Length: 257
Image 1 (cartoon, one colour):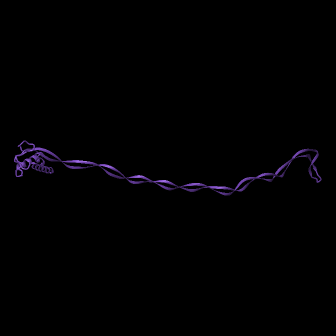
Image 2 (tube, rainbow, N blue to C red):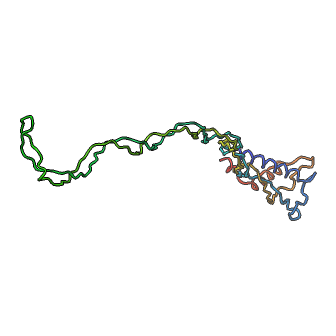
Image 3 (tube, helix red, strand yellow):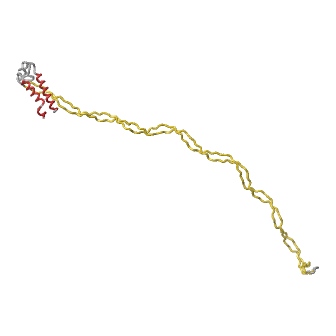
């Protein structure tokens, strides 16, 4: 329907153009481009073609997303550790050991000696008391060796053990735990959010509606009295102009279908 309206407009404009193209007081004068007295001329017609074009252009869109990165800052921290130190104290103690001393002791000892004794034979005799007793016979005696022992008390030197003690000073040591602290610099790190942005190319397209003018020429012939002397146009001149415009643009009936 819109195409039909444009075609009608083009035809009307073409008719107006033809009518104005006739000179004032047109009658049986000489036409443009025609032979002398033929009443024919070349007429230009402008038509418009509607076109729809896709016009695209690249535009950059700022696209951001939240990401995380490690951010570290220096931080002083107190670090402590346990160290053992050797601590000693002087103390006294009694130290004893086994010692020996010389003592004199008495002890019994059997002492035997050799003796030579005269031994005689004995005979029975009656003594003065009228009793019979053994009496040595001196004529029958001999020397006999005898050992005579007796117990005597003697003394001797002996080593007697005893505990000898003395006071001495000695160091008593032990490990004493101590806390030793130092200040150190460490990196305090954590995940921090940030906007990660990039320019992302995108195609943006639109449909452009245009009308392209097309100029064509057609020989138009009419009767010689096309325009009346009074300054108007004859019905034949208008009919010729309308038919010429219709022929230059195309069949209007086709556009209406």
